[in-house]
Image 1 (cartoon, one colour):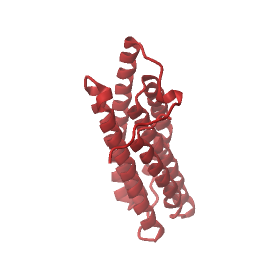
Image 2 (tube, helix red, strand yellow):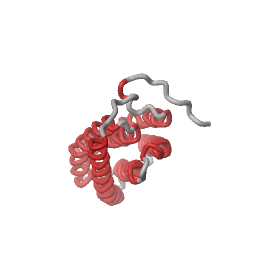
Image 3 (cartoon, rainbow, N blue to C red):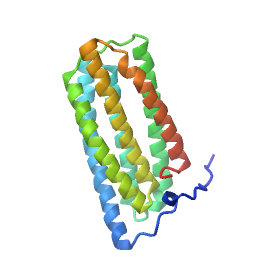
Image 4 (spheres, one colour):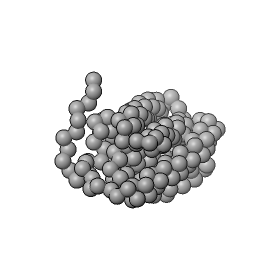
Length: 216
């Protein structure tokens, strides 16, 4: 069923006109930020999946798969802005981003429940701790920069993808906390418990993206 047109009247839903020169600058900026996000997440996914396999850590493996979902989201925005008329592709890009949020929420929930039921006992992972800490520092800057450019440009998909990147920040924090508590206190239940909260946030953002009201 097609979604109803947004009736939002907030300023972010009706951005001020952007001069052609400024629009070109913002479009290039969004493209560069998306490329940086994709590159970082590809590396992040590889390291997390490898480290997670070695440590038998479902949290690390889940984090790596989350990175691949973020690549899909960023790729949707890259595809949108690669065309001559980005606005015409925005609805499709938003749909891909929404689906990526839902996929992330489903996986994180399944893995969290599995861990809480004692189906997986992760070993301490120094590589995972370092990776989570680096992501916790990098992702907020990428997210904030893309969100600012997307809002000024009036691109709901760019803003939506920036929220996907911001969600990775939350996941990085949860992962870091869980890995540290597991390594120091043996609390293997810590990260899946908090990750369920992140899954709930992902569902909310997915619904928002589906409605096309990301910037409001």
